[in-house]
Length: 260
Image 1 (cartoon, rainbow, N blue to C red):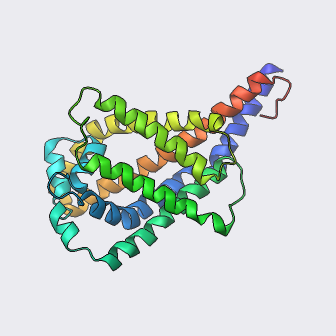
Image 2: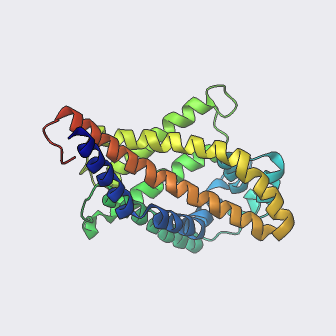
């Protein structure tokens, strides 16, 4: 009986994974992120031209790639000062509008994970708030914060990342899921991002170098897109794992309820 229950529960979890469409959502995450969010972040990271690293160096930090691979990435993007000087107010406004669609996509994924209906149209302000918080977090990382060279840099990054993804789920789900239920997903997402960074160091870093030689700048773009797909898998997969862990805790707390 216990074996049958475990098999049924495993099948239920697999149905959740299939229903989410993790791979398809991750592909959309990568495409929309590169086309709509990246231009906005290029401008934001260039706001502090004197101290800011620029989007290329910020992206290199996230990928955790080697110095030669960083130089290949830098060849794709404008210098920090140039990006900020050539951006108009209208252009920045359009980038912001396009960036809001990224929050909408992320919200749809979270709602699918937690089996929630879409929010009403008047809740769209949450996307504006979420995008503003994302820009703020990335801006702080782009202007060389005091802890950048500190031994506690990794610890601070983990704490900020956990709090951001925890809060993001709560905000985009319009408070319909409790903080306690969302915390495992935030932790799983950050742990997954750390694993992705290690993977990038040993896989994507040499791929960028070889692809740049074989295909030129287009090869570097392909590798970055592949990394963005992996990033999407971690973001959605971490939230889904948090949901499964939450259900498992509820099942153990209420063993009579085997529907979870």
